[in-house]
Amino acid sequence: MKVVMVTNGSLFHQSYLSSCFSRIPGVTYHCIVSTPIEHSSQKMRLSAELDFNFSIIVASKSKELWDYSRKLIQEADICIVGAENHAILEGIDRVYFRYSEHLFKTRFWYLNPRTYLRFPKMRLLYGREAKNSWLLCASSHAKFDFNFYGLYRDRCLKFGYFPQANAGRKIVNKNFPQSKDDELKIVFAGRSIDWKHPEIAFYATEKLESLGVNCSLTFVSLPNKLRDRICHKYRRLISSGKVEIIDELAPKDLMDIFADSHLFIFPSDNGEGFGATLYEAMSSEMAVIANKKAGATGLLVRDYENGFVYKNKKQLDSILEAIASNPASLKRVAEQAKHFIDEDYNAVKAANNLVNFVKSGYKETYRPIEPVSKV
Image (cartoon, rainbow, N blue to C red; front, side):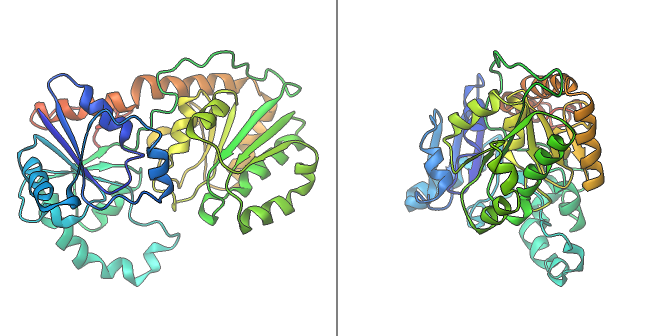
């Protein structure tokens, strides 16, 4: 079976999934990069740390590679297309797997005239493709967003991003707090920008402290004006020694911190297309508190089973109070998160399910908690 993925210059989020496709017996896999690779970007710098054990074709380098890439796309049994240069698909009529996050990432998207003015463009770009193709939803909101434009109706599959993180690796020597007196290690990791709401990590830590919980926060985020304002607001908490602020970490070092911590705060709103750090935290046997609006939350988190989900401050406070009243409960939730990633929602499962789905003539069905299940 021939599998190709057509993407842009950043391979960071697709590297492990690509590796898993390439390891399936009987599968020949190619990753086609349809736009010039930007070596200056942070993700490409991180990608340089990865071991690419699969074929990468940079189609934009020459006409020969461009034509060869189009030939591979035409002949492949599975063609996954993401943030590609759309010109590489022109004139090729086939079934695609469109890999996308959600489209509406602003709070009041339905009040914006541009939302409705996009109808002709969306129909022109995807209308013909969507009739026979499938949408791999890299966000829990992707189905609604594309269906809003009349695209991929009844042809949406649950997917997401699948970093390797600590998936499949045993987490050893992690001792969860059994009472308020035992240290509860909290982590936030992400950019300090408005829609990621990093201030919520400080708020949660301060709230738990006020409820008598012995807690600490590791805050990993590059410095900027928003981070400075947040640190000024919570200067008492920082000066007490309860907060460690780290500017940046290599992925491996961040995974080591996750593996040694207990609770991950994921407060991004619908500006977050997916949110790989949520996946990474769950793979590291951490309990997670996740904003319902983020793209990854609906795909990964089942409330009070393998994590906690909140929609507003009142619900967040309720979760924090429940944790304060019974810190020992975090161990069960974190173990369920780890089990979910290791057994049900990972790159190996996603790659094999998609291959088997196509082999079955697009008829194979999967459990709702697995990738490639219909949504």
